[in-house]
Image 1: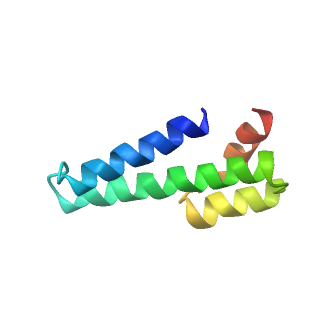
Image 2: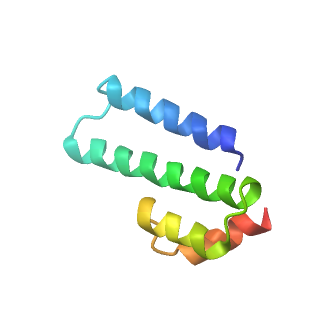
Image 3: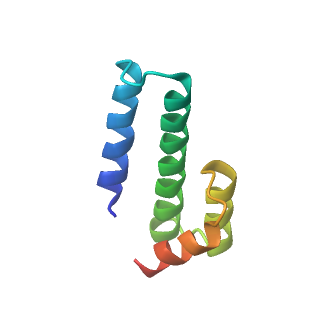
Length: 81
């Protein structure tokens, strides 16, 4: 998945939050978790491919910032792209 798709997903989800699209606090929280998760994926992906981030740092970013508890599997996916 390209960074453009991840960035657009974050943009649209944020617009939906701002527009009051979600009907409950739980839905809003789920959307915010999704935003955070995608942002961490962009940070890890860009970090590995353009900034020399190693696999351990990418996994830690996903785990610490993106609520990704199976971060090593995701990092392997990013590394193979």
